[in-house]
Amino acid sequence: MHAVPAGDSASSVAVPAGDSASSVAVPAHRSAETSVPIHAPIAARWSPRAFDSTAEVSDHDLRALLEAARWAATWGRRQPVRFLVGRRADDVFVTLSGLLKRGNQYANAAGALILLCAHRGADENTARYSGVDAGAAMANLSIEAVSRGLIVHPMAGFDARGATEAFDLPDDLRPLIVIAVGTLGDYAEVAPEIADRDRQPRERLPLDEIVLNWRERPGT
Image (tube, rainbow, N blue to C red; front, side):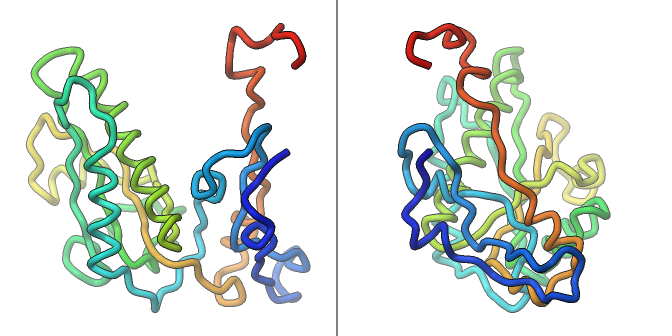
Protein backbone atom coordinates (compact mmCIF):
# COMPACT_ATOMS: atom_id res chain seq x y z
CA MET A 1 0.00 0.00 0.00
CA HIS A 2 1.17 3.54 -0.72
CA ALA A 3 0.98 6.78 1.24
CA VAL A 4 2.65 10.19 1.32
CA PRO A 5 6.35 10.31 2.23
CA ALA A 6 7.29 8.92 5.62
CA GLY A 7 8.38 12.33 6.83
CA ASP A 8 4.73 13.37 6.82
CA SER A 9 2.95 10.18 7.76
CA ALA A 10 5.19 9.38 10.72
CA SER A 11 4.50 12.67 12.47
CA SER A 12 2.32 12.37 15.56
CA VAL A 13 1.18 14.20 18.66
CA ALA A 14 1.14 12.32 21.95
CA VAL A 15 -1.87 12.39 24.26
CA PRO A 16 -1.29 12.52 28.04
CA ALA A 17 -1.25 9.09 29.66
CA GLY A 18 -4.03 10.03 32.04
CA ASP A 19 -6.59 10.53 29.28
CA SER A 20 -8.80 7.65 28.15
CA ALA A 21 -6.94 5.05 26.07
CA SER A 22 -4.39 7.76 25.49
CA SER A 23 -1.16 5.80 25.51
CA VAL A 24 -1.58 5.70 21.73
CA ALA A 25 -0.43 8.82 19.88
CA VAL A 26 -2.79 10.68 17.59
CA PRO A 27 -0.98 11.21 14.27
CA ALA A 28 -0.67 14.75 13.01
CA HIS A 29 -0.79 13.43 9.43
CA ARG A 30 -2.87 10.35 8.66
CA SER A 31 -2.01 9.43 5.11
CA ALA A 32 -4.41 7.34 3.08
CA GLU A 33 -3.24 3.85 2.18
CA THR A 34 -3.69 3.44 -1.57
CA SER A 35 -3.08 0.67 -4.08
CA VAL A 36 -1.00 3.05 -6.21
CA PRO A 37 0.62 6.39 -5.30
CA ILE A 38 -1.68 9.43 -5.50
CA HIS A 39 -1.16 13.19 -5.21
CA ALA A 40 0.33 13.80 -1.74
CA PRO A 41 -2.15 16.47 -0.52
CA ILE A 42 -5.05 14.16 -1.40
CA ALA A 43 -3.50 11.28 0.54
CA ALA A 44 -2.79 13.61 3.46
CA ARG A 45 -6.29 15.07 3.66
CA TRP A 46 -8.30 14.04 6.70
CA SER A 47 -10.81 15.71 9.01
CA PRO A 48 -9.29 16.42 12.44
CA ARG A 49 -11.35 17.89 15.26
CA ALA A 50 -8.46 19.28 17.31
CA PHE A 51 -8.13 22.92 16.23
CA ASP A 52 -5.59 25.36 17.64
CA SER A 53 -7.77 28.04 19.22
CA THR A 54 -4.94 30.61 19.06
CA ALA A 55 -3.94 30.19 15.40
CA GLU A 56 -5.28 32.57 12.80
CA VAL A 57 -6.12 31.84 9.16
CA SER A 58 -4.49 34.57 7.10
CA ASP A 59 -6.44 36.60 4.56
CA HIS A 60 -4.14 35.25 1.85
CA ASP A 61 -4.76 31.60 2.78
CA LEU A 62 -8.49 32.11 3.14
CA ARG A 63 -8.70 33.76 -0.26
CA ALA A 64 -6.64 30.93 -1.77
CA LEU A 65 -9.05 28.32 -0.39
CA LEU A 66 -12.02 30.17 -1.85
CA GLU A 67 -10.26 30.59 -5.21
CA ALA A 68 -9.61 26.84 -5.29
CA ALA A 69 -13.31 26.26 -4.60
CA ARG A 70 -14.34 28.83 -7.20
CA TRP A 71 -12.39 26.99 -9.89
CA ALA A 72 -13.92 23.59 -9.18
CA ALA A 73 -15.72 21.81 -12.00
CA THR A 74 -19.26 23.07 -12.56
CA TRP A 75 -22.05 21.51 -14.59
CA GLY A 76 -22.98 23.56 -17.67
CA ARG A 77 -21.05 26.56 -16.30
CA ARG A 78 -23.99 27.28 -14.01
CA GLN A 79 -21.74 27.97 -10.98
CA PRO A 80 -24.45 27.55 -8.31
CA VAL A 81 -22.11 27.46 -5.28
CA ARG A 82 -22.06 30.35 -2.81
CA PHE A 83 -20.21 30.93 0.46
CA LEU A 84 -20.56 32.83 3.72
CA VAL A 85 -17.25 33.26 5.51
CA GLY A 86 -16.78 33.88 9.21
CA ARG A 87 -13.47 34.64 10.91
CA ARG A 88 -13.09 33.67 14.57
CA ALA A 89 -15.18 35.94 16.81
CA ASP A 90 -16.78 37.99 14.02
CA ASP A 91 -20.57 38.08 13.65
CA VAL A 92 -20.77 35.44 10.90
CA PHE A 93 -18.51 33.06 12.82
CA VAL A 94 -20.49 33.47 16.03
CA THR A 95 -23.78 32.89 14.20
CA LEU A 96 -22.50 29.78 12.40
CA SER A 97 -21.00 28.45 15.61
CA GLY A 98 -24.37 28.80 17.30
CA LEU A 99 -26.01 26.77 14.53
CA LEU A 100 -23.70 23.76 14.93
CA LYS A 101 -25.03 20.60 16.54
CA ARG A 102 -23.61 19.73 19.94
CA GLY A 103 -21.26 17.09 18.53
CA ASN A 104 -19.55 19.70 16.35
CA GLN A 105 -18.81 22.26 19.04
CA TYR A 106 -15.09 21.51 18.71
CA ALA A 107 -15.23 23.75 15.62
CA ASN A 108 -15.57 26.80 17.86
CA ALA A 109 -11.76 26.67 18.08
CA ALA A 110 -11.30 26.90 14.29
CA GLY A 111 -9.86 30.01 12.70
CA ALA A 112 -12.72 30.30 10.22
CA LEU A 113 -16.12 28.78 9.52
CA ILE A 114 -17.40 28.68 5.94
CA LEU A 115 -21.03 28.01 5.07
CA LEU A 116 -21.23 26.35 1.66
CA CYS A 117 -24.54 26.80 -0.16
CA ALA A 118 -25.85 25.93 -3.62
CA HIS A 119 -28.63 27.44 -5.73
CA ARG A 120 -31.32 24.98 -6.73
CA GLY A 121 -31.69 26.81 -10.04
CA ALA A 122 -34.63 27.17 -12.36
CA ASP A 123 -34.69 23.63 -13.76
CA GLU A 124 -34.47 20.03 -12.57
CA ASN A 125 -30.98 19.42 -13.93
CA THR A 126 -29.50 22.43 -12.16
CA ALA A 127 -31.16 21.37 -8.93
CA ARG A 128 -29.78 17.85 -9.31
CA TYR A 129 -26.22 18.80 -10.17
CA SER A 130 -25.82 21.76 -7.83
CA GLY A 131 -24.98 19.28 -5.09
CA VAL A 132 -22.29 17.76 -7.31
CA ASP A 133 -20.81 21.22 -7.84
CA ALA A 134 -20.88 21.83 -4.10
CA GLY A 135 -18.98 18.60 -3.45
CA ALA A 136 -16.38 19.49 -6.06
CA ALA A 137 -15.91 22.94 -4.48
CA MET A 138 -15.53 21.44 -1.02
CA ALA A 139 -12.94 18.94 -2.30
CA ASN A 140 -10.89 21.65 -4.03
CA LEU A 141 -11.00 23.82 -0.92
CA SER A 142 -9.91 20.92 1.28
CA ILE A 143 -6.93 19.93 -0.86
CA GLU A 144 -5.77 23.55 -1.15
CA ALA A 145 -5.94 23.78 2.65
CA VAL A 146 -3.78 20.67 3.08
CA SER A 147 -1.22 22.05 0.62
CA ARG A 148 -0.95 25.15 2.85
CA GLY A 149 -0.50 23.26 6.10
CA LEU A 150 -4.09 23.90 7.25
CA ILE A 151 -6.77 21.48 8.33
CA VAL A 152 -10.45 21.45 7.44
CA HIS A 153 -13.43 19.58 8.79
CA PRO A 154 -16.70 19.61 6.79
CA MET A 155 -19.82 19.31 8.95
CA ALA A 156 -23.37 18.41 7.99
CA GLY A 157 -24.50 18.67 11.61
CA PHE A 158 -25.91 22.18 11.71
CA ASP A 159 -29.28 23.92 11.60
CA ALA A 160 -29.74 24.60 7.89
CA ARG A 161 -33.12 26.24 8.32
CA GLY A 162 -31.65 28.42 11.05
CA ALA A 163 -28.86 29.45 8.67
CA THR A 164 -31.38 30.45 6.02
CA GLU A 165 -33.19 32.62 8.55
CA ALA A 166 -30.10 34.06 10.24
CA PHE A 167 -28.50 35.17 6.98
CA ASP A 168 -31.73 35.94 5.12
CA LEU A 169 -30.82 33.57 2.30
CA PRO A 170 -33.08 33.37 -0.76
CA ASP A 171 -35.45 30.41 -0.94
CA ASP A 172 -33.56 28.69 -3.76
CA LEU A 173 -30.19 28.81 -1.97
CA ARG A 174 -29.63 25.63 0.05
CA PRO A 175 -27.18 25.70 2.99
CA LEU A 176 -25.42 22.34 2.62
CA ILE A 177 -22.37 22.20 4.87
CA VAL A 178 -20.25 24.18 7.30
CA ILE A 179 -16.48 23.85 6.83
CA ALA A 180 -14.17 24.52 9.77
CA VAL A 181 -10.72 25.78 8.76
CA GLY A 182 -7.67 26.19 10.95
CA THR A 183 -4.45 24.71 12.29
CA LEU A 184 -4.05 21.37 14.01
CA GLY A 185 -4.08 21.78 17.78
CA ASP A 186 -2.17 20.09 20.57
CA TYR A 187 -3.81 16.84 21.61
CA ALA A 188 -2.48 17.38 25.11
CA GLU A 189 -4.91 20.28 25.39
CA VAL A 190 -8.09 18.90 23.80
CA ALA A 191 -10.91 16.98 25.45
CA PRO A 192 -10.27 13.21 25.65
CA GLU A 193 -13.32 12.46 23.51
CA ILE A 194 -11.93 14.59 20.68
CA ALA A 195 -8.59 12.78 20.83
CA ASP A 196 -10.42 9.45 20.85
CA ARG A 197 -12.45 10.35 17.76
CA ASP A 198 -9.38 11.60 15.90
CA ARG A 199 -7.57 8.38 16.77
CA GLN A 200 -10.10 6.21 14.92
CA PRO A 201 -8.59 4.44 11.90
CA ARG A 202 -9.09 5.93 8.46
CA GLU A 203 -10.87 3.40 6.28
CA ARG A 204 -12.40 3.30 2.82
CA LEU A 205 -13.99 0.49 0.85
CA PRO A 206 -11.52 -1.15 -1.56
CA LEU A 207 -11.71 -0.38 -5.27
CA ASP A 208 -13.15 -3.78 -6.14
CA GLU A 209 -16.19 -2.95 -4.00
CA ILE A 210 -16.86 0.50 -5.43
CA VAL A 211 -15.87 0.01 -9.08
CA LEU A 212 -18.74 -2.24 -10.08
CA ASN A 213 -17.21 -3.71 -13.22
CA TRP A 214 -13.86 -4.52 -11.55
CA ARG A 215 -15.14 -7.28 -9.28
CA GLU A 216 -13.95 -10.02 -11.62
CA ARG A 217 -11.08 -8.10 -13.17
CA PRO A 218 -8.09 -10.36 -13.91
CA GLY A 219 -5.20 -9.89 -11.56
CA THR A 220 -7.19 -8.24 -8.77
